[in-house]
Image 1 (tube, rainbow, N blue to C red):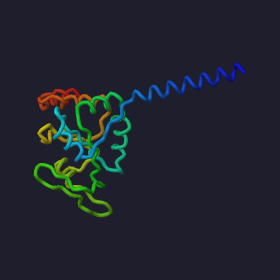
Image 2 (image 1 turned 180 degrees about the vertical axis):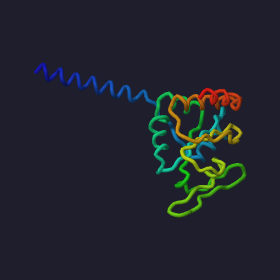
Image 3 (image 1 turned 90 degrees about the horizontal axis):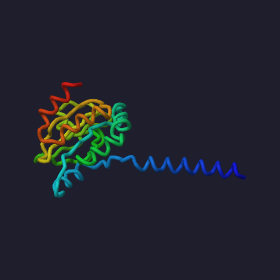
Image 4 (image 1 turned 60 degrees about the vertical axis):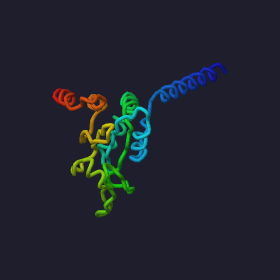
Length: 175
């Protein structure tokens, strides 16, 4: 009987610890473009906007979701400093208003593309690409390619200040 009690105690302790560690991990709260834009207009202290432009078929996009965006340090930092938008360049069908223009989905072949993605990425549809947008809704820069958590955080930290171009040169020169 004592062995059964010890066994259940050990399982209970394991489950308690597992739940405790899981609760500490912070998940990114992804928003639609419209939600992020609305928050940036109504919040007393608006944040910059971060857009993850991806596609369903992109393996590096999935890897970045799993390894980088789900990293607790990255998730906490990004949620604190940016409105986080996830934008599927080939499946997002809703029209988007930005900068006085209206961008729409363009059917092409089996799927298509969204004009908003084309504009954000300066016509270079490469995935994954992340885009930083300032509080005035100006595109700062699109940054293509997969980034590991540490490298991503170094880049993202640059865009929390308004002196990002000088700082970006400093960060990229070290890599």
